[in-house]
Image (cartoon, protein in one colour):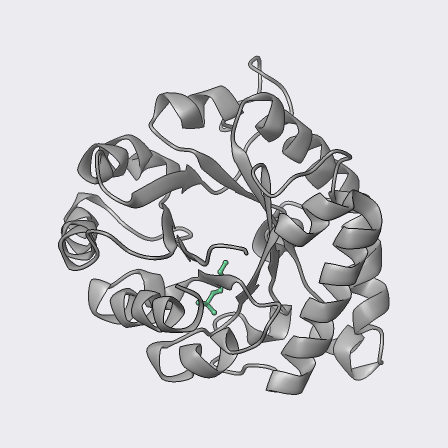
Length: 250
Ligand code: 13P
């Protein structure tokens, strides 16, 4: 049985003023039946981890460098995320693949560094609208899975997030049939590669998850939670999404 995971990706949003949102979440979800994760910008990770310390809310980074340390201006190593109280790291988000030309091979190298550093890697995949319309979705996802995932992943060390690029920040979501098709495909791929651990690795859906659509998305068998962008910034939006996940998977 996989435990649900409600993960918030704050992207390049949030300052000290945002910490109050997490205080509110902490108060609202003292003993959740699902896992809760928030990945703030790097500047807030230490302070946010202090706020969530001793609560049910985990924290994480939004990227890490493949190297352990060194001359890489502006980058962050896995050990720095741990040092700032984080336990997870988002890797290969489509915005990083687009903004920083990250390839599957680089995402794979980052995931190896994350695992060696003891972090849980949240590895993101997803097709563009052109690829969806050309009927290439499963081919694209298959090749991202093959290229971005290192060997030896387990349910305890990795999470996969399926985020169709055209659904991110647009208010558009795939049909439930489309979500089901891709999540079933990812599950089969994980089981073929990682055996029993492939059953244990959680697969999140991401892209315009809101309180209003969360329940129908979480009703899909191979959707184990969500990676939420905009709706994770405010407790009043993220809290009902967590509650919907508890109702479906808790
Ligand atoms: P939105 O929830 O804002 O569409 O963002 C999804 C996402 O990219 C999470 O990583």
